[in-house]
Image 1 (cartoon, rainbow, N blue to C red):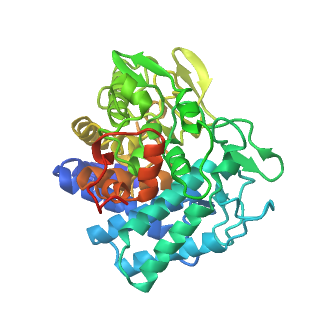
Image 2 (cartoon, rainbow, N blue to C red; image 1 turned 90 degrees about the horizontal axis):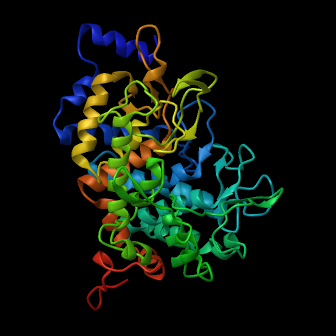
Image 3 (cartoon, helix red, strand yellow; image 1 turned 90 degrees about the vertical axis):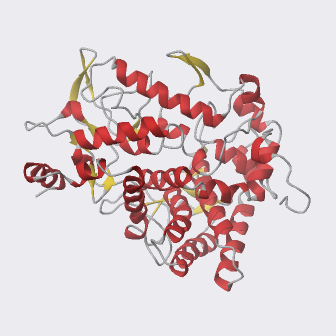
Amino acid sequence: MSESLSTHAKNASGPSVAERLAGEPDEALLEALQHAAFEYFPRHSNSRNGLVADTSRDGSPCSIAVVGFAFSAYPIAVRRGWMDRADAVQRVLAGLRFFRDCDQSDSPTATGFEGFYFHFLDMQTGTRAWQSEVSMIDSALLIAGALTAARYFSSMDAAERELRALAEALYRRMNWRWAQDGAPTIRMGWKPESGFLHYGWEGYTEAMLMYVLAMGSPTHPVVGDCYESWTSTYQWENLYGQDCLYAGPLFVHQFSHAWIDFRGIRDRFMREKHSDYFENSRRAVCIQREYASRNPHGFAGYDENGWGLSACEGPEGVRLAISGVMQDAVGYAARGVPYGPDDGTLSLPSLLASLPFAPGIVLESLRNLLMRYPEVLTEGRLATGINPTLADAEGRPWISEGHYGLDQGIIAMMLENHRSGQIWRLMQTCPHIRRGLRRAGFRGGWLQPARAGREQ
């Protein structure tokens, strides 16, 4: 019996796991979902080399970004009592040693080049998978995780000292000037067969963290007005009465925030707009909710408590009516509002990961959706995508199979930032993050100069 059918059957005799969770107090609900999200990493990792699978599906390659989320989640697990400290240290060390020793030549079968790494790697050998690109953003997420672990595992124990030294060495090896390739902004990727991809990181995206790391590098920082060149491509809009820096999918408003607390700190762009990036993400939640409430395409499940458009897997190979016109469902895509794409698929992980920005709205919506669609919770974890418009004959919505590491990572980190602020506090003490933010022009808040002897 499939998980979806099993859950549906339970509803006939009593509440499902999802329905029971929806009735729990806030802390119990968040503890259960966060713990389950974390368990993705030890369950789907290779303990020998520290690599973590992109998805829970058989044969999935490693995603280097997911490894970065794992490195950041292990400190959470130690603090919460879900994992022994020594075990967590060894898991991080296995990954850091692998990346230190990996092939960094320009070979098509290497692991990376110039301190960056191919987006997808073979889980066993660590070599390039799927003819993927050397990815600047995914490498940045990987290294952010390494730096997070280095801030947490701060004892003088030999293993923890090695961990910190490896994280520092891997960060210093990243050649951001090479990644810039003489352009105003950072290139998106590079392939040994064809060189740099023909486009750079422009427009507001999840790349804020990447630019901060590139600016803060003590060895190979970007040159020129790279950060200003990036922000000059921003798109400021008014959507449903909300002035905002536009980005359609929710993950754009979350990924950099998983590591950096943007409350009260502003670069020149945000100073001119009298806002900050945290407030901008809060407005993005409001825009998402308003879009779903208006439901311009008439999709099932959309309303003020049914929202969450982001990068996720959706149905493919089927057609459905979108504003009265039959169109193809878009499969895995970065769905966004209000300009799309939108085929009726919602990402509950992205909704939950919005918790720090609008906790009341998010918790109300989450409980509502768990009650409506208990099938979305499998093994205690939220599936990446749900499409209620494509329901089967018994009324069960289309649900993505398995789980995605990026979803579980952003849940684990954003719930911890909401509950304790642990990751934000760790990264506030990271000298590279502080240096990068200052070089990018950020001022105010926790970035104010520390008292003598405390600044790092």
